[in-house]
Length: 122
Ligand code: 5GP
Ligand code: ZN
Image (cartoon, rainbow, N blue to C red; front, side):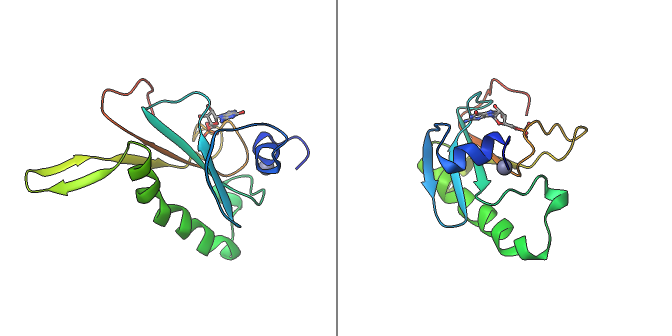
């Protein structure tokens, strides 16, 4: 999509601090982090919103959730369930539409974590 900022990041014409990429998606640091770790998981394909996804995207959406814990672990938002109980942890979030708080209309999953308190309200 010509005027989509995340398509430009996927294409590399706008720089980003990338931490992961494969054939389906890229992951980079949010420019305005709401938590000590704030990554954005972005499909290479332009899908405007979660509501615009269809059955073809089922595996992609599952993959995004499946790799989230490992990415969180690698970037300071890891979750542990130790002998003294659970520590750490992260939030996974997809905003959809104006009332959902979506600002960039290219589907993305926020992966936020790290020690509380967080700066943002998400
Ligand atoms: P939304 O509100 O659409 O769910 O979230 C969009 C997110 O994209 C926001 O957290 C915002 O900080 C981030 N963002 C917007 N433009 C850019 C950019 O050019 N680069 C990066 N890395 N993040 C961006
Ligand atoms: Zn796009």
